[in-house]
Length: 118
Image (cartoon, rainbow, N blue to C red; front, side, top):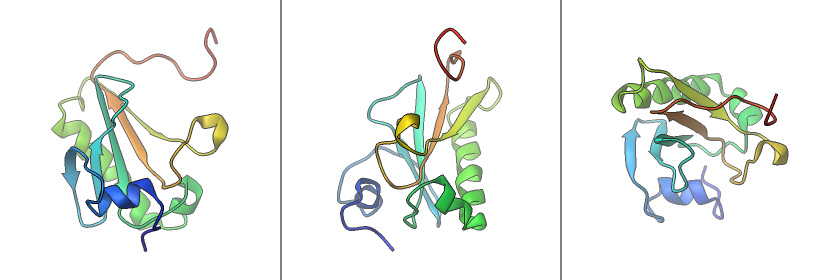
């Protein structure tokens, strides 16, 4: 069920434009408008889940999101060079949209995780 004020629900519904990368029955993937790597695609479940923890309660949908992320990596040509799949949850992780989403990042050498210098 979509949330009426959710940015990603509005994107999935076509109310807000996006650049589609991949669509499945259960997921929608589109280019991030503020890319953090040469390839930066967001994969969202079509059903609204607030965060990764909520999505984990729906294991089939979680698996579909991961499968779609891998399909995006292959489609974008980064499957062999390497890519990162990231689910951000909570303020300290930098999450700004409250609809679970997977970041697919790659196409260049990515930096390390965690605090700078560690």
